Image (cartoon, rainbow, N blue to C red; front, side, top):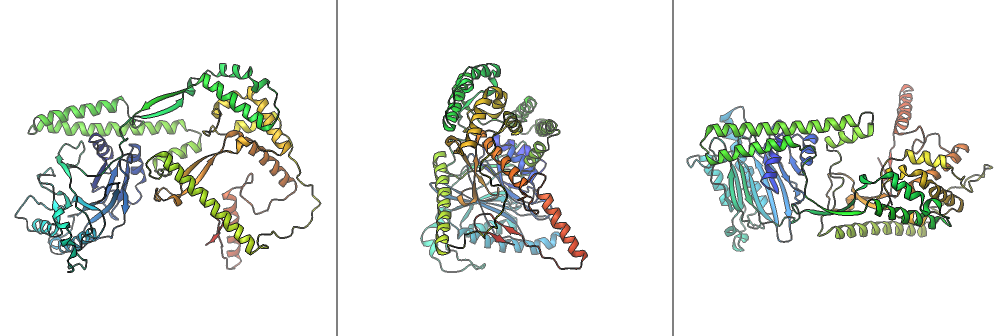
Length: 614
């Protein structure tokens, strides 16, 4: 899998496969770069790598179609397994992928010991699956030649599965050598009747054969030898009775503005003649509302909202060469399908598959090489590309599942709202029980000047702050920040009034108190359906940030002038950071070590109201 990710993903996409069970992935425990490549194709992966070299099992699935949840499984010595469950409104399907390796230094020793261990452990695993809810489906590469009726081990394996009520569904070769090694087992409906669930005898593994699992019927099972990859195994395809998301291939309707088509000079001319530039401003709230109304009206004129339907697009590096290589591979595949005994056609098809994989891989490399070159001198942009290639940010933007976006948003809103109310109630109850606990210690009187008002800002200072803001905008902004900067001479009068009037009156504009809240997973590996695993991220308008930065400058000036900063504070101070704090701690520890004195480092973590020390 490591050297044919592109081919496998193209095969999955061309075959319209919602979830693919893969064995011998050769993935390692931290195969982030390979996972990032899978995510670039629009797919996700659940992987169970082997600790050593080779092996490994995984699910590769389309998150727009299905949402499997990984299930923890006991580790076995003789085979590898990974489980996931797919929940739908109708049923629960439990998918299990198994890989049994035949690699051993001593074949005789393997047949005498490891095979016996496998039969014992696999029987235990089958009993555990039958005692779990849902309809099980077990598939994978078992490396038993079940097509050979004289093979004693294969017959014993099939008899073991049938004794537990499982039926083997693959009856044609799945390997290039002609062997039937890749198998699909489902639970027979005959064995899941009420009478069969009441046997009180125990199996040799200690599990009760009382089956709580449901039967499962698969349909349209086919074996396709033309996978488009260099694998020596064939593709086994079948249909599962699960309801997938219906909108995976339907075009999505989106509304947006074509901001890149705005004539900036004409936009500035309209602003110059508008009340924003020549109007009389009465109050902070009136000026803020005037700014929003006028700018949005001009934006509707120069970049009206348009509606378009978008289909799922290909990867960003997919170009004409990739499409041509894919067409040539398909042409060779059709030629092979007409005459499967034609060796020349088979060799040509394999060559075209390899060529396509090389061309697509080269296109992806060139795409990211170009992104790195565009980020030259931009450390932040370079690290963003690196983090993407190492899959460090994937999963952060996941959302809980729901019947509609409105339902998900309402559930998250209610959860965060209740969380804040709970915190307020705890604070109120603690203040009632311990009224003196929350009172600060007495502060000695100082003769230093009190901060009673904020000094007003100048247009030069405002422009300096605005130019330093990154070109990030909120959905609540009237116009994007880059356009705001282009039109700054025309917008400066009203912005200057809003900021200074707010500083003079001590009034924050009501319209700027609203933020667009985005839920963010605390860790990409956490369950996306658990609301407690999310934190709310508030995205303010740039006018709010502008006013905030002006006030921040005034506060820093006051604290610096009055020497009120702690000498050990590194956070939120200019020329201070985590590096200065670590340097201070490291230096103190080294001094203590030089003095032959014991040192204890106490770290305090404050993730919320309640602190946790380590």
